[in-house]
Image (cartoon, rainbow over all chains, first blue to last red; front, side, top):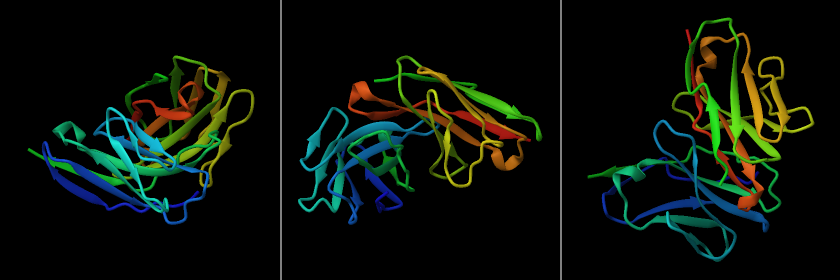
Length: 111
Length: 115
């Protein structure tokens, strides 16, 4: 599986936007970029995924670089409940494969 | 999205004993996966469990230590055998929901402490 690189930790003020970066320079043409987050004492939660175009949903936005070697998860307005570990994961388009987790980024939100 | 229930949610186990974790899904799924998350660490894949076939284990995990059953499309069990304190972890069940674009969903985890 292609590897992703994320900062170990980030900090944000409440009600401000958060941009979580992810580098995936060895991404293949058929790899989707998935983001999950794990809140304290919970299992991982799906956030968003995309292939080439930017994606938006009720939780977040995903901005994908034109060369697909990096992406950014955007939380438009951080709340205390967004404090979690965020994982950027590559997964082939065919499905039928598990997610391979890296260390992720631990996001702290300050009131 | 698939809803996943795991039992037990938490347990304290004696060294040398075995514990079976159950994973129940509210819809039929082909692909199920079991993960381990050691304290302060990320998730590590233990095995893939498909109905009707033996589980496929990742490097470092063996069937004798982590036997898995997958009797139907909505249920699976993971047994942690002959436990030691090093097995103290969160064990997570996950499924691929083909009805939701092959998105993978996770249970809340089973928190095991071995004393």
